Amino acid sequence: MQVITFTEMRKHLRNIMDTSADRHESIIVTRPNGAHMIMMSLEDFEGIRETNYLLENEANIEHLRHSISSYNSGTLIKKDLIE
Image 1 (cartoon, rainbow, N blue to C red):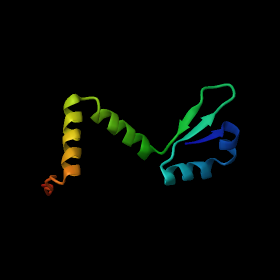
Image 2: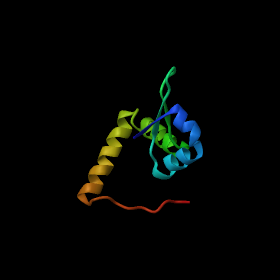
Image 3: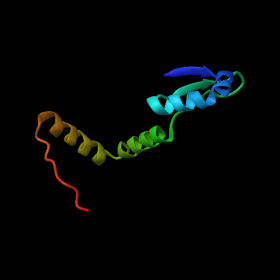
């Protein structure tokens, strides 16, 4: 994870935002007299929120573990989605 100062962020904001989004890399922005912040793309933030939601429920966690186990053992059953 890249760490930059608030001053550096202001000087290169567009480039830093593009790089963060393109590489899916969060950036820590340090501030001398304030709380440090994280910059990340909305897509990455929504992915984190989705993961947190899925891991809030023990039934979801067990279902994910079972799915990963099936995938790793080669016993996963592929089904087409009904539209």
